[in-house]
Image 1 (tube, helix red, strand yellow):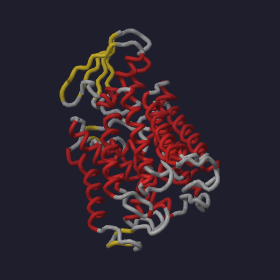
Image 2 (tube, rainbow over the protein chains, first blue to last red):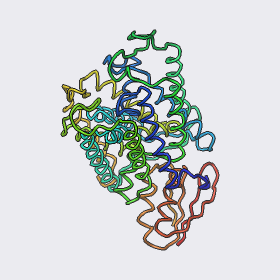
Image 3 (cartoon, rainbow over the protein chains, first blue to last red):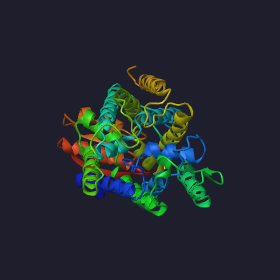
Image 4 (cartoon, chains in turn cyan, orange):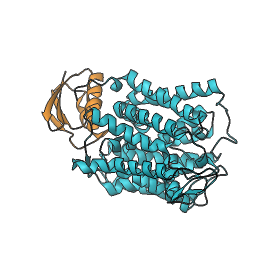
Length: 362
Length: 67
């Protein structure tokens, strides 16, 4: 722990951001959905579908990227002596924040990573999502200034740190034991989309391999899209922000070089044009990320380091994503869901209650 | 001054130290994860402080912030 970590430098975080940006476009070229090379919220939603937790037939696929992020981070944390089983900082609240985050993100149709990728692909609707994300995070910083805290986590039994990575190994086992059968919506107990975003995916080894590398790099560099804006607003520190900027620039450059940039608002891939709810969906999600202390990607990397509170948040997102489709709060390319408005506003209210309840000056 | 941030994750350790960085009184900060160590060290260095890290055992590090 003596500061011999090159990825903690500004050059390090810029390198990692750029790698993630290029890797996302690479995954798109090899089959992942357009402007969705990597989307933690969407991919957790797809995993929920693959397991049958929701039955939206177009978004069901056990995404190897999510598994790879956690396991890559875990291996790197073990090698660096940073695997620390810990938890106990208001887990139920973290689960609920995860649910709310997924509901909000699926109204916009993307996590912060996909927000960056949509912008890099020319999707103007993502400007509303980005503005919402920044507003939500800014709201979170106001709670931090009021003394908001979910309380201390404590060191826990080693097994606590292993369970989430083991769940990922379990998912990997299911994926390998019941591989996709071409044209079939089901393989054994596992669901596979035959059309829609869930049917678009890069080959397994590429998805998994790229995700392992990203997981390892992100563990070392602490790459976090929520932290990027939070630190900028709270402390005027640009360190993490440079990483996100690098991700955007790299993805944009890769798109321009490969013909993946199409500027406009209408007919953007897996996106709708309802600006108000693109904005408000991400206000809700951004506030939930801020109150939980990390963007969806960062939560996976922390879960890989043995942080069971982050693991509980990720499981909350899985449950929230399933619920978003079962209850009709999730959007589609046609527009927001039947209950998207209610889902967004209830989620926002839940975040505000949590924010005030856990502020010392409340 | 001793600031104990054990068990807390960012941004709270930085938030706890931040108000004291404008002064010059020596500050010791206890951290128990590398991310907090890096963030507190980075914030202190940016404000012109020298940071020395001492292992306290059991994953805890004492950051000695000196102007």
